[in-house]
Image (tube, rainbow, N blue to C red; front, side, top):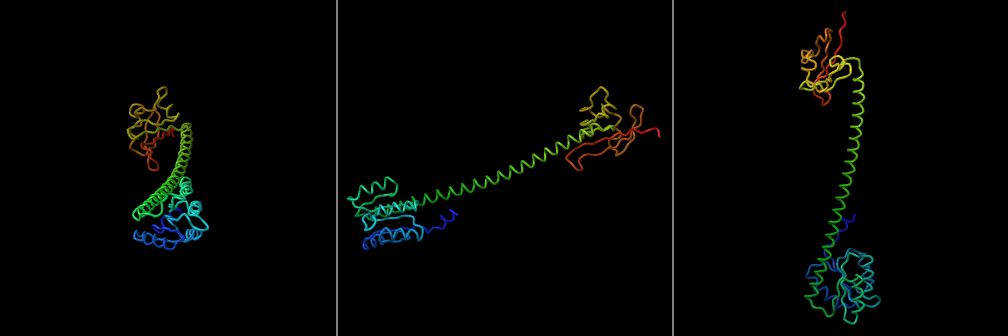
Length: 272
């Protein structure tokens, strides 16, 4: 909302305030050549109403006016429109009151009457540059705020995804532990081999059948279980282990997962 307000403002709007019509006309005639959008008022109250009608960038006001002095008007303008750049035209006799207003921030610059045309135009141009720099800083701050909000939203989404991923991993790990425990305690010998025929899984039944006192895990199939070599490339094969016939069911891994290698299940054949 704030960014739209700044972007939609009329460019380079100048409010001139003076109770003397001829001075107001002279100021308007002098500053019109700098292509400002000029609004005029004859006293402080009219100027406050003008500020309500539309955005103003720079204010130049006379000090000595009936009903409300320029400094009093600028103090009120600062309260309601703090982004305006405020300049007062005054004689030396009002120097103390104007100085106080400058010190408290109600007045940006104090210019004396009678003014020098070139200097006055320069001071007003400088005031507009100050206002435009302030507007640009505000715009950049808003962009930074929007970027930070977008970053916060992205971080929140990433946190959600990370949490879901961690929950999924935790669930998968629990499932794997359960499956591993089930396989470990099955009475049927089961071995897992990677693509290089290294034994990467062996349950208690398989360890008892082949290993006895030698740990099979991590060994080569050709060294630890050479009897299974003929069954490697077959889905089902009959092999002899310690004089007993076994059927070997070989299941390739990786069809439904990222696993590689083969799972070999041994079923002892009876004499029948």
